[in-house]
Every structure is written in C-alpha cells, then in structure tokens.
Length: 128
Image (cartoon, rainbow, N blue to C red; front, side, top):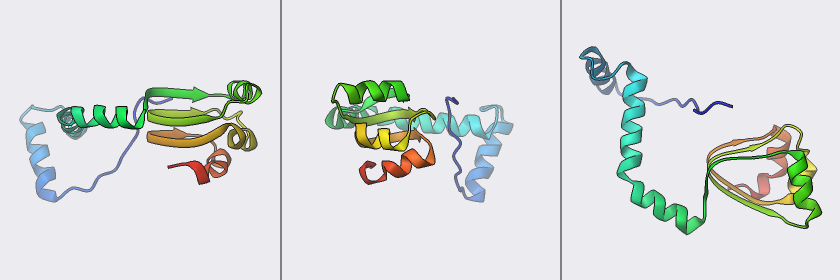
C-alpha cells in the first residue's frame, strides 16, 4: 500500500514559472518537492484548527485496515462500527459487500478510502 496518493492541480503559467525558477536556483530539488513543502507548511500553519476538528469529530488518525475475519468477529459480538478516519481506511478484498453493510454503520474518511467497488456501493448510503 502506497504511503502517498497522486493528485492533480492546475496552476497559472506564472506560478509554475516561479516554481521552476526556485528549482533552478537550487532551493528545491524539483516541482514536486516545492509543492509538498508548500502543502506541509499550510497544514502545519493550521495545526490548531486540525486538532480542534479532530477532537470535535472524534476522528481516528492514521491507517485503519479491516479484513473479513475482523468484520465477522465484530458481527459475532453484535457490534456495529462507526468509522470516522483522518488518514487511510482500507477494507480488504476478502470483505463481501453484505458483511460490510451489516457491520459498518457509518463511514467518514478524510483522506483515502480503499475498498472494492462493490463494498463501496454497499456502503454508499452511509458514507460521508
């Protein structure tokens, strides 16, 4: 599983030229290095707001992964899951859609949600 996700952004030619100039001057190794640094800087700048939101919404932070066996255990114990994640949620390929729908009450992911298209479809009405 990759630790990063690819995104696409549109930029003006002038802004892109400025980035290229900074790369040429040796301040950054390439465009990607500049963009990652800029994004991290903005996220860090808003760290208080992020922490307040995490606390307010009771987000779990990090990488969360569930497979069929784990969801069957939840089902056997009569528990339903409310998954509120900041980071990555991964439901293994062995998780059938009906089991996911039966055990998972709600899904909210700020980041990346990996699951089969069938499982995502089964959870669509409870995914924010």
